[in-house]
Amino acid sequence: MSTSIALCWQNPPAEPLRTTITVAESLSQESPSPITVWGRAEVAATPGVNLDDRLRMLPGFSLFRRSSSLVANPTTQGVSLRGLGSTGASRSLVLWDGIPLNSPFGGWIYWTRVAPEMVERTETVRGASTSLFGDKAMGGSIGLFSPQPAHSSAWLGYEGGSHGTHQADGGGAFQWKPWLAFSGAARAFTTDGYYIVPPEARGPIDTPADVRFSAGQARADLFDARQRLFLRADLLAEERDNGTTLTHNSSTLGTAAASYWRDLRGSSLNVLAFHSREEYRASFSSISSMGGAGRQTERLTSLQSVPSEATGAAGYWRKSAQRWNLTTGGDYVRAEGYSYETLFPTGNRAGGGVQNQYGLFAQADAAFGAWRLFGGFRGHDPGNSHAFWMPSGGAAYGRERWRWRASAYRAFRAPTLNELYREFRAGNAVTLANPNLLPESLRGVETGADYTNSGFRASVTGFYNSLEQLITNVTRSITPSLITRQRDNAAAATVRGIEASAAKRWSHWPIGHFSIEGSWLLADSRFSSGERIPQVPRNQGSALATWNSKGTLITAGLRASSLQFEDDRNLFTLPGYAVLHFTLRQRLPKGLSAHLAIENALDRQVLVGYSPVPQTGAPRLLRAGIRWNLR
Picture (cartoon, helix red, strand yellow):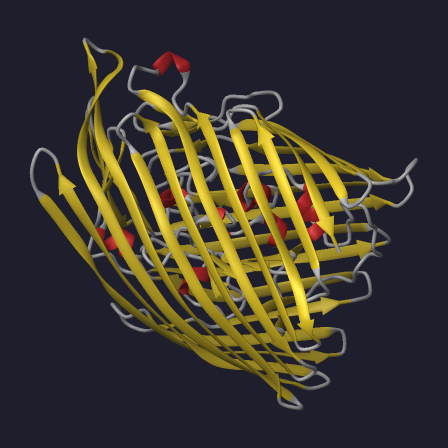
C-alpha cells in the first residue's frame, strides 16, 4: 500500500518515498525497513467495522486466528507480522499516539477501542530494524495517530446492517484559543452476530457469537511553535457471547496518557507517560454429545476474573544535524495482573504477579552521499530473566526514484502474565499456563528495494528470522473428548520469505481517478523439527481497486490466504480461502455522505479454528450508513 494513492474525494500529489517512522509526538527516526503509511483516505476506503479487518489488507498482518474482532474473543487478537505467528499475545507493538495499546496482562489488542474515523494515519514497520521500541516490537510496530489540532469540526454517524448490526458514533474538535484545542469521539455498537460452528456440526447448545461495546476518548492539546502537550483518556466496555449458551466474556478498561515535546534549539525532548487498568471476565464450559450425535449438552467448568494494570513512561532526546541524526533515551513499564477462577463443581484457582521492565536505547543514522548508514542498540531488563542486548544495523542506497536497503537485528519478547499464569478453555480444547516460561529471542536479516515514479510504487523485501525458545501452545494429549495443550518454549524455529507490494494510480482514467494495488507475502515458518508454526499460512495476499469521481468512491478488495495449521503437530488443517469486499461512498449536499459496505460478498465459508469441532469466520455482512460532517 502506498500513501501516494488517493482513495477518497481529493487526490493530493504523490509523496516522496517514505523513509522515516514516527516514534512519538513530533519525533521521527530514519529507518532502513520498508514503511507502509495509510492516510485518512486509505483507512476510510478499506472495508471493515474495526481497524483489524482493515489492516488485514496489509501484507503479513494477521491476528492469532483468522477471526475478526467483530466476534472473536479478545484473547485471540494478538498481532503477527511477517509470519512470526502468535499465541494470543502480540509479537508486534501497537501504539496509539505513541502510547502502547497492547494489553498489560496478555499483550493482545482491543481493536474496539479505536474508531477508524478517529485515525488520521497508520504507519506499519515490519521487522525489528530500530532499537527504539521494547520487547513487544519483535516482529515490528504499528502506529495509529489521531488528527492534529484544527479549527472547530464535528461529525455524527449511524450505520445498520445484517445480523442485527447497529452503530452510532460521533465526535468533534474545538480550538478554543490559538494554543489550546479539545477533541473527542464516542462509539456504540451492537450486533446479533453469527454462528461460529458450521451447520453440519451445530447442536442445541450453539448460539450466535455477538458483541456489544461502547468506547470513547477525550483529548486536550496545548501547543505553540516550540512545544506541544497532549492529555488523553479513553474508555471501553464490551460484552460478548462466545457461541454457546454458557460461554461469555466481558471487558472494561481505560487509559490515561500524556505526551510532551519541546524544541531545544538544535535538539528536541519527548516525554510520555500512561496508566492503564483492565478487567477481563469469562466463563468456560465442557461440551458433550449424547450417543455421539452433535453438540447436545454443555457443563459450566469455571468462571474467571482477570484484573490488571500497567504504568509506563518513556523519554527521548533527539539531536539532528545536516547529515546525521541521533535519538537516545529510556523507558519503563510495570505490569501487574492476576487470574482468579471459580471451578465447578468445586474449587478455586489463582495465579499472577508483577513484571517490571526497563530499557535504555540509542539509534543513529548518517548520510554519506547517496548512502545512509544506521546503527542502534538497546539494553533491556525483562524483570524475570537476564538482561538482553538488542543491536541493530543497516544501510540504504538511494536515488531519486529508488532505494536499496539492508538491515540486521536482534530482538526478544518476554512472556506475558497471561502466558505465565492463566489457563483457558475453548470448547473441548484446554490450554494450560506455564510459570517457567523463558523469553523468546530473534535474530533477523533482510534486504530489499523500493521504487516510485509518476503514480507507480513497488517494493520487495526478502527476510530471514531465526527464533529461539519460541513460546507456543504445545499439544500434550489428544482424546476424543479433550485436547490438552500447554504454553511452552518450543525448539528453535525459522521464518524466511519474501514480501512484495505494488500500486498504480491514474489521475484521469477515463473519467475520474482510478488506482489498483496489490501485496503478497510468502512466509515459510517452521519449527526446527519441520512442522509449520501454527496459524501462519505460507502465502497470503490482497488486492484493492478504487475509482472516485465527483463525490463518488467505489472500492473492491480481495483478500486470500493459503492453508495453515491450527496446532503445533500440524494435525488440524485450516484450508485456504479468498474473500471479496466492496465499498461504496457517496458525498451528498450539506455535509452529508452515505456509504454501503459488503464483506465476504460471495458468502464463502472460512475455517478459523478447531475446538476440536471446526469453527467458521464471518459470513456475508452488509452494512449501510449515513454521516454528517461539519467543518
